[in-house]
Image (cartoon, rainbow, N blue to C red):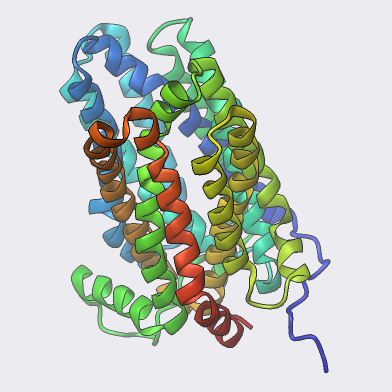
Length: 426
């Protein structure tokens, strides 16, 4: 009997992809610097008011909840490289303007929150278009490899380069990181223009389902994209799984800093090192996911990642020791990114190109929306359990919850998920 597992092609990804990857790297470097510079500026403007500082961070995340679906419509209507170039060019102008505002002493929390929302809105447009564009640059059988390089490059740029650079550049002045972001995004724009100039128009621009169709309203296009996700059995199952898994995982994310401090007894340096372990795992996972796909039986990669990560988080709940947590973060970082790359690649293959932007946006809305719910639920969960279990044991519960949900998904949905991947992802 022949092996039905699709084998990855050995063909090179090509110069256009690597120029696109360079643009993504520069854009993510800017994001990494912003992750340090914007909260630091907010804390300097409101040093005694955590709610106001949190409001700036919330303003930056809101566009993913409010604007992702309309952004998907733009991605499916407009030339995608042009949209990415425009988004990053506008971000350049906004960073320059913010640097001027800070240098002049005019910065305030409301103004910074407005900037954060605008940056977030442009990030939604850029990132949705970028995820949709990969299919135009590489063959279908190389999507895992391409997406793995893009995701692991983003981890390196944001976690290992952007954040330390943001802290270093802040020494020069509160305005300095924003000027650095202008330079980074300029590199991204130039690289994207190079890709656009060498990409055939038929692959650089989304094609409608039927030529000459009557233009419709944004809401009609949003509904079509959501329906396309829901009507596709594999994508529908992945969306349902995301509701459970992302909500549970977000309870962990919102309380892990307290877990590190109160359970492991580590300070800020130790917390940073644990996050570095997770980032290293993510880089490794992004690089090996295409090999895992070919090594495992066809269709089992997503279920394997869920099952393995569920078992690993159970170890943290049972044995909350620093060496155990460090090892789990290293391995689970690779598995989480591997699952994300696998799901993104599958979604890119099974979705028609003219719907891909809206389907990607709908899936991100589900993921980010449930993450927001889970983050709030994590704090409430620990607060409710702490009087009964004690703070330390209550902080172990989110890890047990992630484990239980992941393994339950594998038990109840795993076989169906494998079957759907084998049926639809050929």
